[in-house]
Length: 112
Image 1 (cartoon, helix red, strand yellow):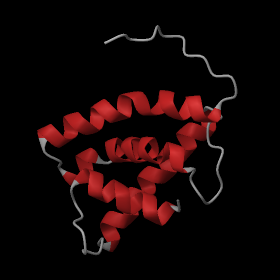
Image 2 (tube, rainbow, N blue to C red):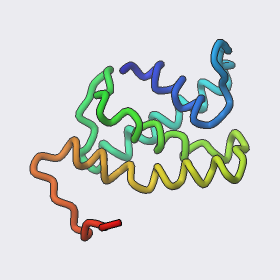
Image 3 (cartoon, helix red, strand yellow):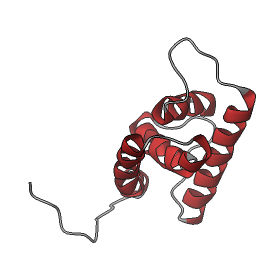
């Protein structure tokens, strides 16, 4: 998936874009900035394994992190914010699982 598609998905996750609408340039620029921040964070932790195309299996996790990075800028509702935070909390771990060979979490698995 391309960065442009990820930006669009993030806008949907934030509730600032509806089907058939175009994303205003200022909002697109802010979400692009969130992508750059997230990419640098993953680069620091050696977890960015992609070039211009993001692997499909980590797309939802990338979107969650990006959405969290720009929640304050778009004034999302408290309920939406809680959903984004919940998803973002596991996103880094999931990306690490998909990008690190032989990854084994240090936390005990939760049994529900």
